Length: 190
Image 1 (cartoon, helix red, strand yellow):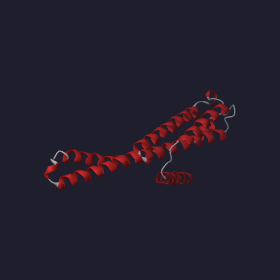
Image 2 (spheres, one colour):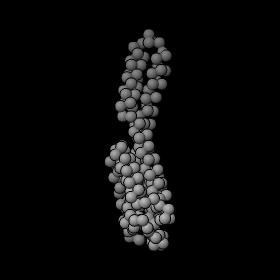
Image 3 (cartoon, one colour):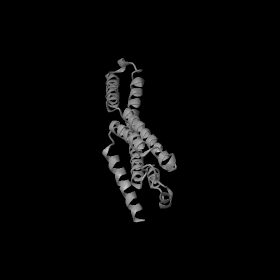
Image 4 (cartoon, one colour):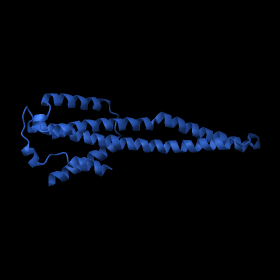
């Protein structure tokens, strides 16, 4: 999954031939173009990080929820036995019920499903912003919005999403940063 998303990162730079063919006007200089390309790369990397974070928290939610369901089902099954059958049954019901309650409280406290949703929503926001930037970059220069308007719109939107995004787990952040750095290094060699 990461390879597919990083492969997209390779395609964001315009070919030299294409860049030379674009005639800038109204402030659309090479530096402005590069800045928007940088926004685009940042958005795509953020999409990747938040998508991976969402998947991580979704897996964690599943890992904690399945035992809850199992123990809750066991409590229901065991409680069908007559408690007068012996103290062993009541002890089993108590133990299994206690484990189910603790795991259920843990699931609620950790809120992995909500964390997963927040990361997915953030990934979608960055993805939408990347699409808008791509549309702007690939329009003929004469059809683009003014540089000032574009920087204002994209800059504010990027900062807005960035300010409200949930924290990315360190392991994912490091893994993707390392992967992107390797891709950049290999691209610079060519």
